[in-house]
Length: 185
Image 1 (cartoon, rainbow, N blue to C red):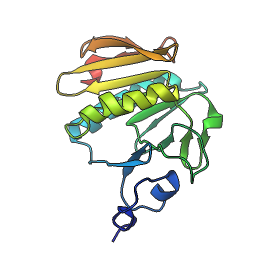
Image 2 (tube, rainbow, N blue to C red):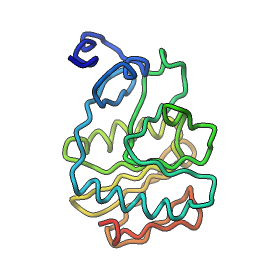
Image 3 (cartoon, helix red, strand yellow):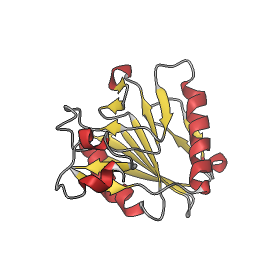
Image 4 (spheres, rainbow, N blue to C red):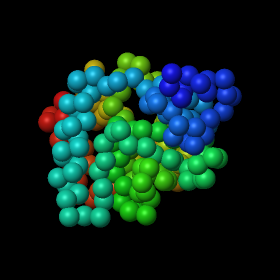
């Protein structure tokens, strides 16, 4: 039996608990969220986004990392850290935030690709957490209605921009980088 089944009686979890589990989960303010496996369409979209971003950052100080990859949004000691996510993709331009276990602090860019099981979670719960953590840019990619919602942090709040699946989308944290959504969808 996996570590998760042995620990479900707890009211609140930490990152230290997750390190002992056999399941892929995320943690928001001590509450566990199970992660479903991604669809083929999800993975194809992720691969194209990764390809375009990776080509742009080549030779630059930023790193593009695709899931599974852990992000501790609010750096604390493992035993006290109660928020841990695995976004579909991150861009991190501060190498000091990268450690053996993932990203310790807010990435510059987070991309989440919606799935039927996580759409509201990504659009509401994670939106709030990413804004609170100071993630500079948060993309929500919709595979069913090909489009991208780009959220750019200004004065602690996200400004939201919608792009149809045929648009060229600028990446604000990577000046000069433009993602061609025709290739993504």
